[in-house]
Each structure stands twice: as C-alpha cells, then as structure tokens.
Length: 209
Image (cartoon, rainbow, N blue to C red; front, side, top):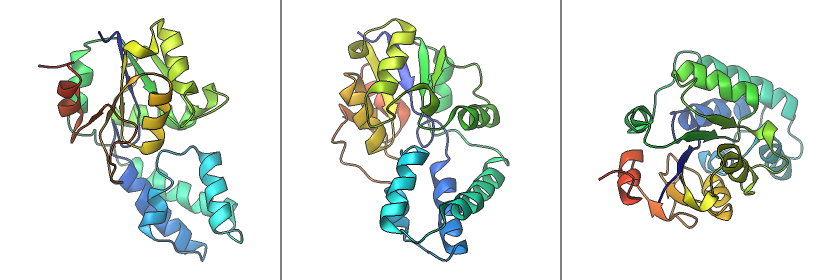
C-alpha cells in the first residue's frame, strides 16, 4: 500500500541536468580547468557543499568562487528560458493519486525558483530542500523528514529519483524506490524498480495499471 509519493526535482521531474552539465563544462573551461563530461556525471545529485569538496579534491588549485560565478550565470541564463518536464511527469502530477512531496538537494531559493519556472509551484503538500536537513542526500534525512511532515511511514512512500545519490537516500530511509536514470546511466543498485520513464516506473510499482 502506498500512502504518499515523493519526487526528486532535477533530472526526475524537470530537465535540468543536461543544462547543468553544459553550463558546468563551460564554467570549468572558463576558469582554466576543463573537465570531461564523466567528471560532471559524478556531481549529479550532490548538494553544493558536497560537490565543492569533490571538486577541491580533484582540482585543488581551482578558484571555486570564480567557477560558481561562471556556472551560476550560465545555468540561470539557460533555465530562465523555461524548463521542460521529464516524460510522464505532468501526467502523474496531474493525477494526484496520493499526497505528494518534493525532496531535492537544491537550496530553498533555487528549488522554488525552478518550480516557478517549470509551473510546478503549489503541486506538493511539502517541499524538502538542502536547507531543511542536517545531512543531505545520500543520507536518509530528507526522505525521513518528508514522511514525518506528511504523517506517513517511509515504508509506505513511493519515491521517484534519477541519481544514485538520491536513490540511496530514499532506500536508506526505507522507502520504495523507482529510479529513472537521466543523463548518467545506472544499474539501479539502490532501486526497487528501474524504469525508462516516470509512468513506466509507476506501473512497475503498482501505482498505475
């Protein structure tokens, strides 16, 4: 029995990961430290502090302030033009089959900015961001908080995620995990169901027939 549905944001509901990777590649090049796309894939699903530590470990001489200035400007310019929903997202959100929560590694302001641009503001009973938890994904805290806010057991919550980081977070929280990989491939290590899109995942989990 599923009592609530939780969604990740970037790469799961909205098509932002390709924009983040493209703007990130340009930013690394702009500060004199070009990286491969595979390096960018390792940052997917990570909150900013965690991503910063990974970047510092790989490129200790890089000026992260300059990097994030270039990256932020490029990403904001790309997303300001509009954000497309991932396949199946609009239909499942519109169906409102269960109470819904958004659980994202984005900061509060950035998460709500993306929701506004994508036309998703007001679609969720609660929104959990990086700023709401002591330990972000892959720790279970974000999904445990979402379940607590909705007054449901994590074991009866269905989660849609694209990244390994997010799927691990939901799995460790005890939720039922549907992983729909975006630009980074996955074998679904942390997922109960691995699907090609959101609606296919909903069917695999028994939410849709």
